Image 1 (cartoon, rainbow, N blue to C red):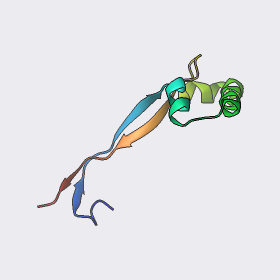
Image 2: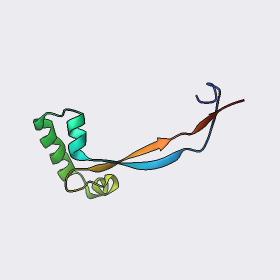
Image 3: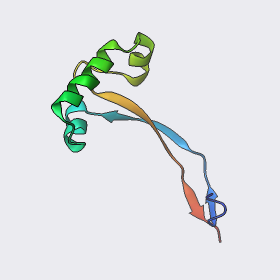
Length: 74
């Protein structure tokens, strides 16, 4: 898609974003009943999933993200 739009894509850069639980639920205006449901899901998820997402005791977690640099073709 980048090439069709006239860009030269670079190598994608993978990173992990830390999502603070309290800020996240406030930003999303999550109703209290859903906050409790999310906390329950986090508490009950398999250890492998909890480790991958880095679920912290306060509910904060990591998300995978990628940045795709691109330059305009001359």
